[in-house]
Image (tube, rainbow, N blue to C red):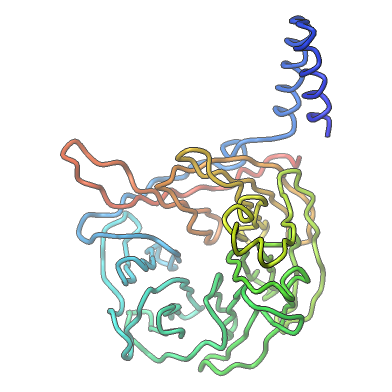
Length: 359
């Protein structure tokens, strides 16, 4: 609001050609923004860059998990593949293959590890979960009651699947399966905005802390819901970001004609991540500016207290946030072509949070 008032005053002064006052107000605007917002580099430090080896071509990276021995497992829906890389980025093996048979998948997306090293892969094309042992051998698969997934987690023998889609006040968005894939519970209401809204809105996320508590956020509502392991709502953290813009609810005819325009009119919550079992990162998409993707980030502790807020950062169109694991936050980026026009493989950039003073 202060910035808006200053800009209006600035416009009036420009009409009066009062250059001195204009310069003072420009400086004031700069100082306001400097004080209000902080950059990604002020909160995170780059730990290392892992260049994936050229032994295999990675078409895209949808999700990532890190094994206890430091090996990376990534899902590549474009290549219909799940790859294992060493800590240094060297290609080690490929899990599964393309198809609809046992152990096969079409468009693998979200992945998760359990305490024994078993790997769970969302087989989005076949609407199921495939389970592999720690050596990559297929064990079994089970059908999803609801998809597509935007988060997949495994904790204490339970498989948690989050899907933000649906219509109606009775719709549930988090489903719990046992270690054999049998549905044992479902919980989490859609925001009221979605009860009679016949469009799929993707995004948001779900994470689980070391105590088994579940945190979830929906793309149309800047609220983090905290649940017990069995789905009892424990708390709601209503975020106060100055950069988040909630969606309005147009009539159906208007949105059918101008759907993309409506999508660009608000800022969806695009991700939720947990760092070092201490902090929750809530990501808001601010849209694109040229070839840059713009984001805002707020960081809170597990009780909803703000650690850092209004963090602004941009990514190139060739970069993607692929998640967090342990105490690290990961971004995948495809480097530009080399001198011969060859497109190098992806590199994974690992960041650590700076545990400085709160803001």
